[in-house]
Length: 623
Image (cartoon, rainbow, N blue to C red; front, side):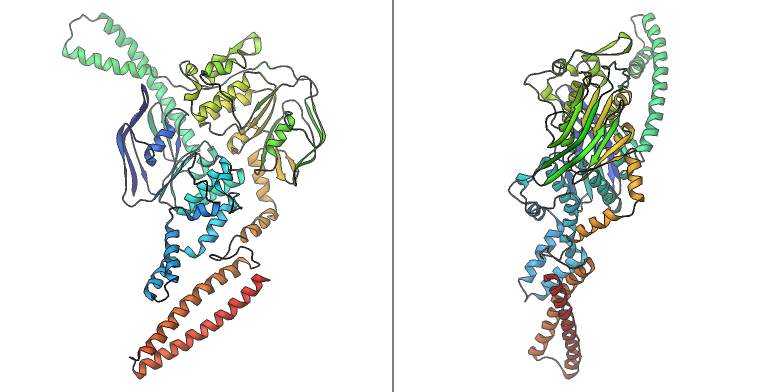
């Protein structure tokens, strides 16, 4: 079933054409990953099909009565509402049914209205809505339901917006970088959620494992054209390689034909026949194909970094607390040459604090940090780069250096480094304020690298970077001969770059794990599920009855039973009232009176049994 048809759309800004004559469809059940370089129109195309932006040409046609939700990079939430109020203020079909049910409860005389509302609640399982939204908020680390949106960080707002759209259960879901601001545990939970829920997805993400595990189709926008690959990310990589190779063969043939036709054009007299004019038209088409260039930049730098001495970085029993929060507890480690360490852990466990202590912006409460005399840090932080008004791209990088020395007496200039990180010569003279978020991150990386450090520290370097740039960065880091510490939730990136992990488990516990992220997950999944039991216990606390206090001693099954009894009692009381009304009207014959009397007796018995069990559970809950 077709949900959306994108028909011949085009978009440009002034003389810059992002894309034109783009057409494709989104069908029920598709989970599409949309891939493109930053600055090539990826976000514009997503905004157009989501209805937040108008195309210059063409149209987007939606199927009637289609429920669509969009998660942008910067969600627009009411700052005056709490987390829980934001959930209840959303445009959610389940909430509408709940409101109808609550309204019906206020009018007990309207038996038919109550019955309809009750059946609707049953039909969409609205009784469990509170359980559902608390479970999702718990998984996304938004446990303080009374916290105001204005007090949330940017990442928390993004996670709240994600929770909202997941609960709305749309037919079609657009996602712009859904894994940004999620830790690894949240990302893996979201993967599982999309696997079991019947969403149709169209998403932009740089998380390649997420593309691999969630998507069944990859659509790539390259040089203004769309290419579709009916498979996951691994399938896309294999088939793109084949396509590029075939294109190169076609380009080489076109070049040969171009040379031949160019000779013919030079020999032609000025008078043109109809036949020659046709051949001239063909010539220009061949010329366009022959001059087609692929803008693939592979970083192959042999950096001649400053020599590292025998002493690099030593951490001697360092500890750090903030109030009651213990982040590091007598942690010790001596770095060796060529160390490549990945840091993982939940938000708030001290990862960024650890990096700031190494680089000297935060001092440990106890212990000592010893840095070798030859060590030159290059620190890429989450805060990004400070830009002066009116600066051009090339001016920004030249403030930090003019070149990087390479081996054998060679060097790479600031311009060449920018080119390798996908800033062509024209782009280098753009004003920085014109750059996209991902392009600014790319520029920031260049400012760190051109200082020629021998110890690189990267705090979430993959956020907002497109897949092409990630490949460039990975190739650079694979050739980087110095020490490396990287904090990232990009599992594909971590697997490719690091040799072992520091796992921040919270409460000052840091585990040194000898392997990459996939090794770590394999190891964790093979262990006894002690941690998972603790998590399930915490989760169970959120599974409460509709509009009940969350402080409960009931098990999950008892809580479900408690909810069911409350619903059954209301239904039984209504049935009892209906029969009693029949008796008061006095229109029943003797046979009907006996029949209704037996029904009434059975209902009263069921009410008494349910009430007894309800009181038992209530006492347990209060105790």
